[in-house]
Length: 171
Image 1 (cartoon, rainbow, N blue to C red):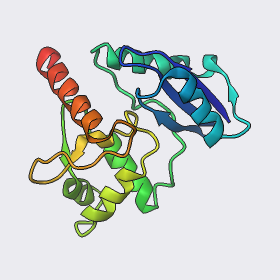
Image 2 (spheres, helix red, strand yellow):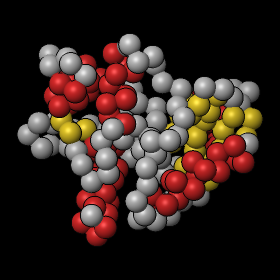
Image 3 (cartoon, helix red, strand yellow):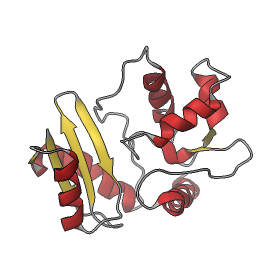
Image 4 (cartoon, rainbow, N blue to C red):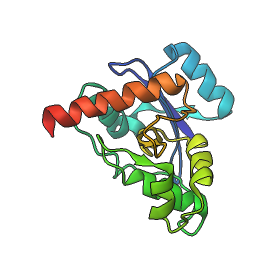
């Protein structure tokens, strides 16, 4: 396992990757020293290797500087495509910046119209925010819903407003 911590316009971010791709993303919330300690605690034995994450860090910096970014090419260590979680995360990954989908929409997208709550559960377990943009999944009635990343619902709302502004400015 390898990890990195890097600065963005919104604060330090962190990421962890293994042989199969990205496994964890920590959005801006913690001071850099605390973020390093968190990642070392979560992934004992992981080595810091900032160079391995240069492309990803550049995408994140661009995102938080208001540039249009596509994380679609970022290789991730996801559950298999045949598993429910894998289907949900791949469907969520297809939601573009400036757009939102409901938990029910995502359930319909994967052919499981009865699974909106299960989709919400998968979103709450998403270890790769931004790359799997779970902040773009909301309730059918337009309410934002929860957000399990550090910073909670306030960060989710901030990300959605940021992306709405971006899509209006560059749309």
